[in-house]
Length: 195
Image (cartoon, rainbow, N blue to C red):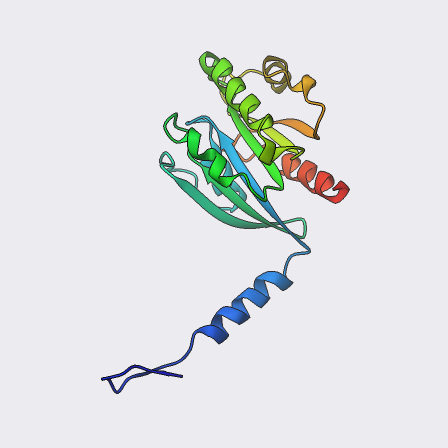
């Protein structure tokens, strides 16, 4: 118990509450992963993260800093860090690289004007020492749109076939509809077990 001076109020220590909460978090999943969710602004990162957490995706606002969600999937606790993709925020991505288990890079498949820009940013990530060897899942998002490039086209344009220092996968998906997200998570699960 904590007794504050000059008052007659007594407060219970919150230590027991925090400890029991931490024990519950630790005991529930078999494995805990830190996932870094990156991509250009408007690629659909926050939509994907909310869909993973079974949250409403009807109203999404641009991420100005970062969002963190913990999601249970296949006996794993996924701590997903969704970092804003605006040009002014991208230099700060490096601050979140440490202890990353999986990099998820989201591409807007319908935004063909920014293919070079998204390819440049992905290449910068793959060449960073702190992300060396970290498996990368590329979600080719917005496949529900008529102008969307196929995942195989995006893989070719991003030169994913040249990646030799880590496992990688490209997965067609629609964040709004939730299509293809589960398949990406299954790939993550398989590649984490190999680590």
